[in-house]
Amino acid sequence: MLAAARPVYNLALIRAGNPLYLYENPQGALRRLTYLIKPGHQLWLTPAGAGYQARLHKFHYRYQWAGVSGTVADNLFNAVHAAGEHDQLALLMAEIFGWDLDFNTDTRQGDSFRLLVQKRYRHGQFSGYGEILAAEYVNRGRAYRALQFSYRHHGRSETGYFRPDGRSLKREFLSSPLRFAAPITSAFSYHRFHPILKIYRPHLGIDFGAPYGSPVQTIGNGTVTFAGWAGEAGRLIKIRHANGYMTLYMHLSRILVHRGEHVRQGELIGRVGSTGLSTGPHLDFRIEHDGVFENFAVVRRRLPPAMPLPRRYLRAFHAELQALQPLLAELGARSRLLLGVASANAAALPPALLASR
Image (tube, rainbow, N blue to C red):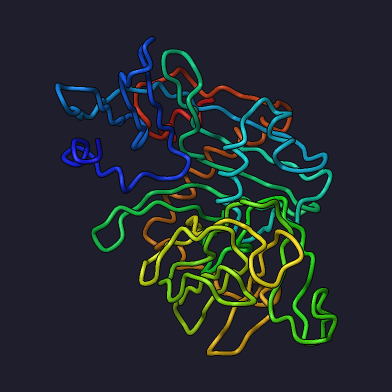
């Protein structure tokens, strides 16, 4: 099956989270294998003689732009569910605001969100989310806002999320190597009592308590310099970043990258575990700068943002922002808002249409 698929798609490149199905006939023999490579593109493998035949099956979604808002009672997942939406929407928000907010520790009762999002449908059934065009998250009374904007830079098309003043939300590092439900169980310290060794010694990282198997993400672009067993640290990943930084992810149950691999910010690299010298499932996360361990709780607050939007695009950016503001304001009084009819393509709504709503 692997050999038959390779001319169409290399199954060694399958990604976590993409659905793969095996279909059997009533006698239990394989009738078809399907794998969703990306939205609208699915690999089909069917028996053919003594082997298998592979083909790329393309299909179309219908898209609907909608507004969604909600208030947090305990955590963001439940707030999204209360608004009638799915877990994926909470993850998308975490990706947008992950440079400014750590949803493990920063979320508070009474926080609120509102956003304009693209929904995807197939055969009339909801099939996931597309782009988030604009979003606002209010944390402890402070509003964090983001607008998606596309532009050309050095001959290439770029898309990112920007604050109302045109500054990028993106920073060199994310706020956490975990997305949700991971309280800090042990902080950075030069003099901590070790629960197993029963002695005082430095703990030069931050422990996040998380369920076994929770996904671990790299906080920034970099190159894997070590991925394997490391004594007391158990299964360990080390990643070298720009400007002299190195991050370490310890006590993992699984390692999903290899030495020499280049990884991108937010990429899944491993799973939480309890290997090595550990009392239970958690992630011991550490960061070095020029060979010296630093407290990440301090480091993440002082990192500069990425490059701002080029000045020649600011007028167009502010025009889109002004068109979207009335829609976001209207969401303050409603939990949902439909923005026009469904379309067969994933294009963003034109500013003129947004301004007329």
